[in-house]
Amino acid sequence: GAGVSQSPSNKVTEKGKDVELRCDPISGHTALYWYRQRLGQGLEFLIYFQGNSAPDKSGLPSDRFSAERTGESVSTLTIQRTQQEDSAVYLCASSLGPSQEQYFGPGTRLTVT
Amino acid sequence: KNQVEQSPQSLIILEGKNCTLQCNYTVSPFSNLRWYKQDTGRGPVSLTIMTFSENTKSNGRYTATLDADTKQSSLHITASQLSDSASYICVVIGNDYKLSFGAGTTVTVRA
Image (cartoon, rainbow over all chains, first blue to last red):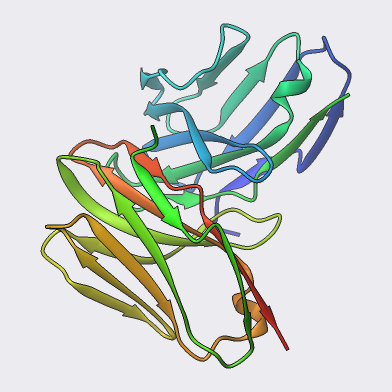
């Protein structure tokens, strides 16, 4: 399909392990965003990419969180030494440009046990 | 304090009835306001987008209104259907790329 895809759809990991979440944006979309959505709560901005640079990392909750993007393509969000509070749905979105309509992927549900 | 406040937090309505969701925001300067529908286990999907100069925007049975002076928006669902059961999220975009999300209103439509 032509939408934003994310993998895995579900991830269960043990506390202390590292996880890597993947986002494939819509082809041609230069802007890419990561959000976190805890159960019953609103969306929380994590990081924004324009191309492969990240002008805004202000939403990353701690230095255990990092993200990178290859060109205007795939992005990975890495969480090191996962904690139970990291359990959430991680959503990725992409847009043609920074102020334009964002299209969301289905999310990755992360459960830290 | 969140810059986008939505009410009610949740509501239950009977199929065929109408309902109105509220969104108050403090984001300034303001570029546009969007309403998203998020089905359980899915990513949000855009319903309407309004700039500060628009007062109303419709998408089928969904009608959004905006009062930029009072910084209020509403989403009206007409003749609700079971498939309208979802979370509805108000998103306000400032004069940069940043989105401010409301916590959402969970709508449950019952037969």
